[in-house]
Image (cartoon, rainbow, N blue to C red; front, top):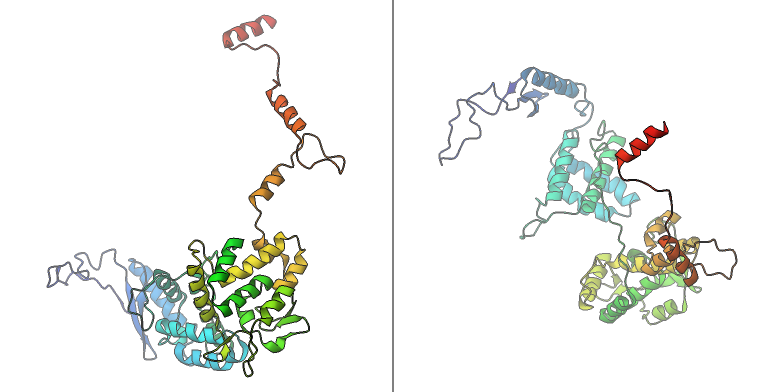
Length: 418
């Protein structure tokens, strides 16, 4: 066993440049700095801080860590030594590419994860290292490959997606016998409130349509009619538009959805050219393949800027939010809206309900002095009732007996009565 402190009284107090030496401590080793353990097992070196200045407690922590390693709780001796980078390649080939639609996204996320965990043996990844990774990503300490500008902090939702990918990889490592237990199992995701409540007004909708290019104009119009997600519409093929309906196969929940074509939707689709050899409804003329979501988002953002809409977070999903919100406001029942939108529960429709100020006023105006007894009566208070309410509030009520403010007079009266 080897315990040591990084500070020392033998170190010079100042460095060559005249600055203070952080390793100098006149009281070392009887100081408040933490002890560090440093030992070797099976030719591999292990060292870390014990986070305590108590030497006896530090000995106990070192003994516990050595026991855990020898018992194989980190996978040593009982599990093969494989780096995170090597196993992630196996994960992509044997799992993600076969079973996940987000395989391409996982491949991009793993490029980031390799910078933090790629050279580590799987059993060397700890929950603390993952928490440090989360903190650094939120603080924006990493610069993307090829970028020369200063790194920017990431949003919690982005960090959560990276964390989800890391958890998936480590869970498969456990399932395939490469790791005893996943260190990410107890790591919590960051709290995110990404429920957008932004909906477009009629004027904003018209301005975006006028500012959008021709093909993007058709995409925006169809999204506002159907309430479909951007990826669902971009994956739509001409063969799926038939019999007065369009069928969305590549949905978020994996279940195909059939949406009847309204006259407006038929007009939009009828204006789009059907070019032989281009099966997708929205085809990139340069690549002759479907538009990507990122490409469509770039064109849409430029249209929003040209439309002069600079307030609010207007994205492609805002189109879906606007369409479903107007269906709900139109009084259509929840199950009809769910059949169109693809939601699996009515609870998800709550975020699309936006009471207007007039609706709130009408609800508050339902107060009546007397209950409504006939269907012909107005649900709101009449002028006569408002006049009666005013008179009622002006009348004096409660106790009418005489009172005295002088407590001595009251006590004298009570003594005479007794």
